[in-house]
Length: 349
Image (cartoon, rainbow, N blue to C red):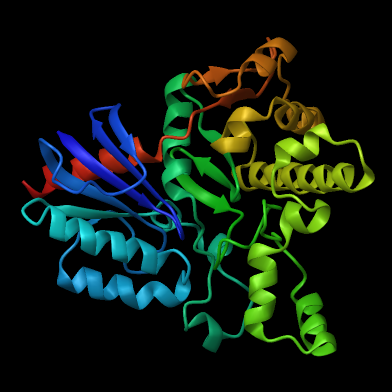
């Protein structure tokens, strides 16, 4: 089955035509004419809320409900809906399937999903949703293929956005992003977790609006806020104090997060690095592994240095005899979406 996959970001679009496990065409804009042989369209949608916990064929009711969720993802949801509407006009005769970044984490244990907040806030939907689910799902499935029998996997999706997932027997049981994609690790321009009391203090002291605080946390923090650039590659090449501190803070949060995910799993058998940084930054992997030696993580220097993601191959970079297998897995959200679409269409008959 040939599937058109549309991955809409807040200001970008990745277009793929996928057949089986092969991507046969890519572009950065919608085609002007229907591609030949496309049987269905898969859409990445960031937020599914509590209702959408698996991929769903889009109709008018689903589209209306997705629009209502825009308040939970104001940067990404409207962009995805705009692409969805354009694509339905382009290909009105084929099914369009929404695939959700939150769905992989929809069945988190209540202890992992629940914030210690007043009930009336929790009743509004204040909970941990988690994101990057399509990437985590693909990477954890590849881990199961590459290390048969492994049950406890931590996936590190490290890119401009970054999150971890603790995966037990193929199910997400913990993750670092929360109600929004700001929580958790240090990212390119996002702060990651910050003491809420600090934000209240800043709002009061500097007379900041919620929108101003949100803009700073989303667009002016993270690596950019620490060292003036959002590009980790540049920081790894620099030797000034700001750059060193930024990388140290990034790794401190990463290592602590991985250890916390391992605690949620009751141990660790496979550690997976994926995403732009995860696939292309051997130094980050090596330094994280060294700090996690107490868990049994160790990477082979040569294998790790050679694994830079450009080949598209998934690689085991573990040191021989290491208790934990460390993998570098190419992010394949497009194939994961196509796989989900295929299953939805088959199930519908």
